[in-house]
Image (cartoon, rainbow, N blue to C red; front, side, top):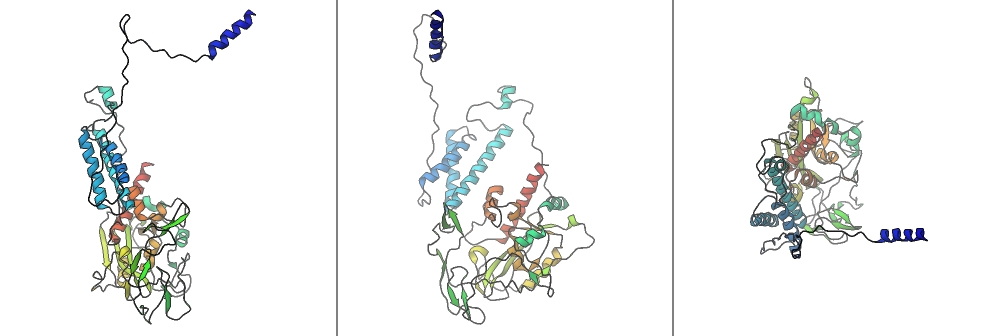
Length: 460
């Protein structure tokens, strides 16, 4: 009986919840004082500055003001200064951006710059901590600044130039299989000199059985042309200039965010055509070997081309070549072999005024490039196959940024150059309504490979 009673006492004692005891904080014999709960001060958020032309929703603007304000309070000891800086940065993004996606991207870049200021200030000790926490130096040396350094020094990465850059890029030179799979022009195994072959051909536009009838490459409508290929009459071409992408299983256009079945959002004066006779590619030239020169000393260059629509499809209109220091060494406008019917200004940046008086031909450009490049010169660019087709150039030593920074879904998908620049270089390109700039695109490609090489060097 006593054993059962003892067991019951043990069970009862273990089943009761543990009581948390607090150490008395008042002296014996003195009246107890109720504790006042400590409140953490909340950070007051500044509201976005009001503007006459409110382009974006106020809640979206408030989100990015808050994001920048959280960083600015780590830069400034004065709360008003932090708020004013955050408001100025957000307002600048709002003023210079017209599209919501560009605005968001610009705000993220501004936030990235602010974080750099915080990091730099923490390194030199000039940035006060908003949280009141002591730095590692302060813990060791007290409130006065210590005379020693415990900051881990980053390994210096030198800029790669000349043969050093060439050697680092060798691992990204495209193989023959990659060149063929990505649609680069290759030397034809048979036939006369100057003939080329493209192994991976994209979908060709519809070919009408009606004589002198063509289908527009942009809107798909049929139109009639004369013997030269010029439209018989002007017809408005209403189309979407952006690509179709999928959001939650629904297709939308990147230009206007409308669904795939929606009508065009842009109009042009004429319909255009883009047909390539892959069975009869002629007029191509190949780079030649350079004797008496080491492979690593044959240079690294980036190039980019712009094209316009002519009576026979897309033709070269401008070419830009830059060296490894991002300096332009060759740039010229090119007169197409056929009459221009659409300058494609949104993408080429070329206008009718630009082409007035241009006499440089494709043959002139080919002759110049063959004197600049050898067969071992590394040519850098983004989706260079389209540039090589426009130049009618066959070259083996290629570093393509679309391959260096592959798409997460793999081939045939490729990431856009502007997205790569935004993510890795923290810069915005191709944001001008006046069209793309071949110089800007070539510089972006060269900066991307420099970034990649430096990151690779850090791992070695």
